[in-house]
Image 1 (cartoon, rainbow, N blue to C red):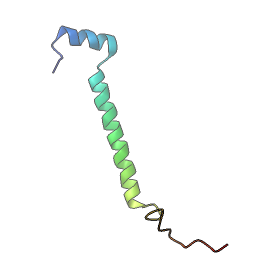
Image 2 (image 1 turned 60 degrees about the vertical axis):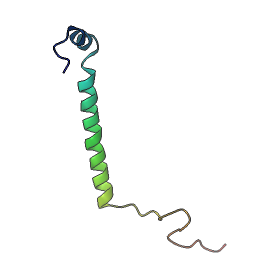
Image 3 (image 1 turned 90 degrees about the vertical axis):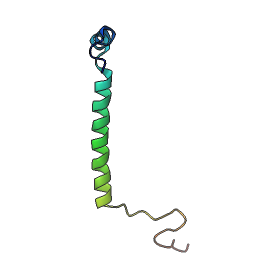
Image 4 (image 1 turned 180 degrees about the horizontal axis):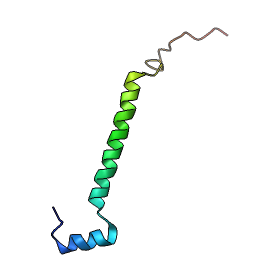
Length: 61
């Protein structure tokens, strides 16, 4: 996209190719999140549905 402009070339030389770095980091985060979501879907947590509906009734004091 901007590879043929001298300003972009100078910025890349000074600061690195930030758009490429951001895309790479976004792809890494997307893969990691997909892995976590897949693992969570396979093993759902055993938490109660809501704080107001506990799984087991509390014991009397």
